[in-house]
Amino acid sequence: MKIIACYSNKGGVGKTAAAVNLAYAAALSGQRVLLCDLDPQGASGFYFRVKPSNKLTDDRFFNDVRRFTKAIRASDFEDLDILPANHGFRDFDIFLSRMKHSRSRLKKALKSANHEYDLLLLDCPPNISRLSENIFKIADRIIVPVIPTTLSERTLEQLYDFFDEAGYRKKKLVPVFSMVQKSKKLHQESMDRMRNMHKRFLLHTIPFSSDIEKMGLHRAPALSYAGKRSAAWAYEAVWEELDQLI
Image 1 (spheres, rainbow, N blue to C red):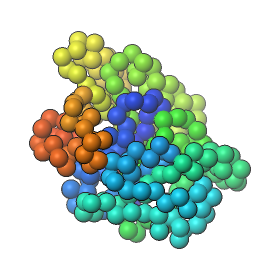
Image 2: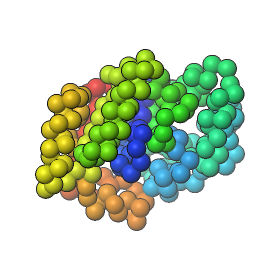
Image 3: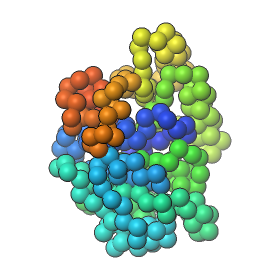
Image 4: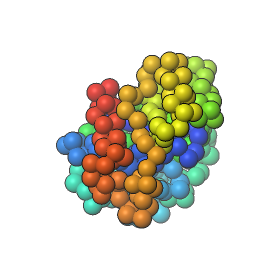
């Protein structure tokens, strides 16, 4: 089972939209996918019309395999299941801070799904914490949506600096431009500059689009209702490119 994390240390960059659509694209390609929502806001579950299991609290998430697997929900789409978040996930860092060998706990919790799925995609909360450090350690690749603006560029540099300081493998980081408006000169200049600094940016980009904004109304991946319009096609292209890296 491969593990991809969808992560950003900056909010509002289209992280959850990317996680939902990439999970759907992977399932369309024939892979068995589990989308694990680790963000206590629970947006991924909302988009898939899946209610969380409030019995999966922080201690049971990490220690109770039976409850973990029972909390997994089927989506309306073939080969795509969801582990929805609940508000109890906000205490993950407190719980992990009390545990010995806390950096290996997430991997042990997820191991129960190892034989059921080809791909585990993690929708991560937007912060650097003990939970995110678990994620940085176990993920095969970490896709990082980046808006082509100065502040997003700054937070990406902070993430690279953190990986340097903590000794994590920077090759795991796979930035992708998100919410791109090609008509904006600033966006094009920012993309050119950042591509020169970080060669691992994906070639395909995710546009700013009303089709993506409507996910909350449809409560479904944009790929499932927007056909081959530019935004939906972009997620499919990003998945195909990402799939070659894992």
